[in-house]
Length: 214
Image (cartoon, rainbow, N blue to C red):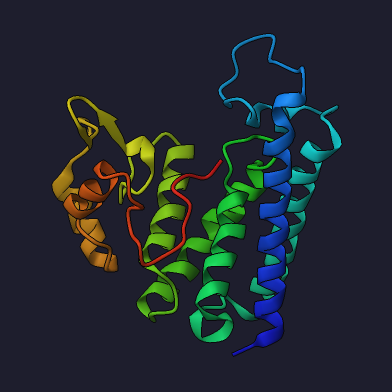
């Protein structure tokens, strides 16, 4: 266990959460609305503004600093898994990488999206070695596919589902293919995920991942 690296990862994830929390708590006080329809929903639209309030700019700065730091860690030692930074550290370092692929253009820049995509082979190795939760890998892969307008491999993001009489997989997606992909990395079957989502519970209670990148 590398206690110093674990502490650094947890501190950075904590700074990320604190910055986002402060921004969201303050967002409704800003009398700033898009003049035209934006693909980025309110209040995350604020993160696109060059002249945004300080708390908003803080989120962008924290995420970019975390991505820069994460690049250095991976260049030096590869992806640090559970045995290196603990279960909480593994959750935290995933969060830093997931935010690199944000749908907000000022955060999910082409450079950050490329970095996230280049990390996927490292994550695949970590999952095979039992060093990373399969859902962490699935989130990153599906996020990348969403950003490039491709169907998801694992259907772990809310965008893979639609509601009719009840929540179901989008009709354009193949449940059998998704379940095969899930089985290959040790992820629970789609039916289990759907049951938990319909009940309003986290898709997988064994990890702390957020349901969507923002």
